Amino acid sequence: MKKSLTILITGATAGIGRHTALHLARAGHRVFATGRKPAALAALATEAAGTKLETLELDVTSAASIDAAREEIANRTKGNGLDVLVNNAGYGLMGPLEEITDQDLRAQYDTNVFGLVAMLRAFVPQMRARGFGRIINVSSMGGRMTFPFMGAYNSTKYAVESLSDALRMELAPFGVSVSLIEPGAIKSDFADRATATTRPLAGSPYAPILANSDKMKKQFEATEVGPECVSRAIEKAATARRPRARYVAPGRTILALLMMRLLPTSWTDALLRLAVGLTRRKLALGEGAHPALG
Image 1 (cartoon, one colour):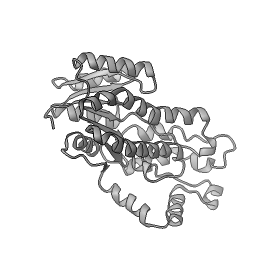
Image 2 (spheres, rainbow, N blue to C red):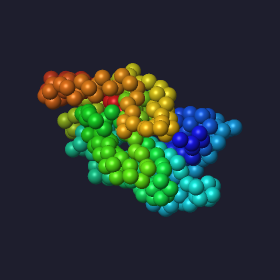
Image 3 (cartoon, helix red, strand yellow):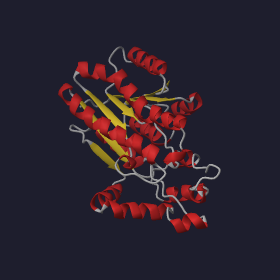
Image 4 (cartoon, one colour):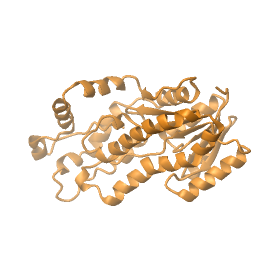
């Protein structure tokens, strides 16, 4: 394993991506931190002064933007390309599935799924030809268990899990490894953006619960931990001699996943409904809360 790696991180202007970019750059790696917001990228570059962090505008939903980034990285690396691609860009969409518009659902998949695949198509061929590379896909504990009102977001992470499993087997003969990072509740802007989508539609049968979006957010934030654990997991996946297929962060999240796996489905359904307030009584009384886990 090389001491210093060339790493690209998508969605590096906030949250997990930003912290990971700084963490890896301070560890001595050359990091291409990418995102859509020039001002946020400039601020990141200032904070990373003295490291080998470089910023690059990139929109994973734009083929032209991805092509331009690939050419720019080829120029900056003198044709060597990337050692590690960290697919982190993504966001959460919350709400009852029947009330989520086709436009919003497609936008969720464009970023969380199709954007990830587009990045793979852009950068994997050179890794395969060279016989070495690392793909690190940031999923979620929500890619292994589904929460009420999180079906749209969770389904994208289930897709990321399956795509990664297939890629891990397909790329292994070419020396390219694929690892999944599965964060639990992490301090970031995830809750802000996710709960912003929970405003109830007029006449919605879920209105008594969705109206409590501030309470949902507070419950989410009460379980959050810092992004350090995720940054360390990504570093392990990038540098380990034999990277694991999955890294769960923080470790305590494993207990929740194990519980969901061992308990009967009817039990876990009931527990999650109660936690959210999906009961006839609470819906009628206008009570409810949401333990949104990202």
